[in-house]
Length: 119
Length: 108
Image (spheres, rainbow over the protein chains, first blue to last red):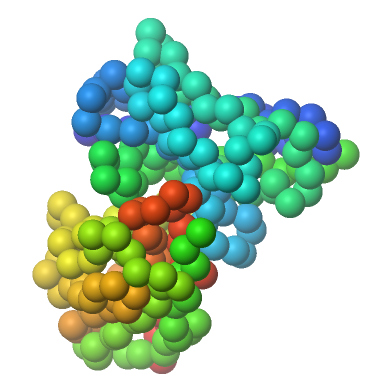
């Protein structure tokens, strides 16, 4: 059974970099059939796609965040990561990692992790 | 960017009733790349429908999707107690992928 688990600090200071890792178990991140992505949800609000990547390193980002986001993969650890630079309070959200099929739907999700941006 | 508008914002129904949720796009969605997700409090979303009308693995047949172009519908034929949740539509035919603001389905 595929499982994804987010990890990283729950509190980040304004202007610093948010860093999260998603560990994949029960399946290989090197599969040619999927993308691996990040979606976030501010408290009491809707969902926002952040970006996705293919195991080879090809990435796709939401233009609204592209200047601040990097998604990378570590195939040796079966993990992928999110870095969001220069965060503000508006970046406070639950961050989900997920597996996307090649057309773009997210069929498997991590449980999500709340990241609060505050001094 | 394609903007998705869901209606109604909140839908109050009783178990056993039929629910009809709407999702309207600001422009035509390529290849009917429209999905529906269900989210319960404290949980990650769950994929219900993809390609506008195909049920994801393990989704009961009381859930159905329809529509094309800019207008899409999620129908739950007979509500079960576990169906009361927030539902989001998502378009994945154009980048960036975008979600609607959600419809809350609550028990009347």
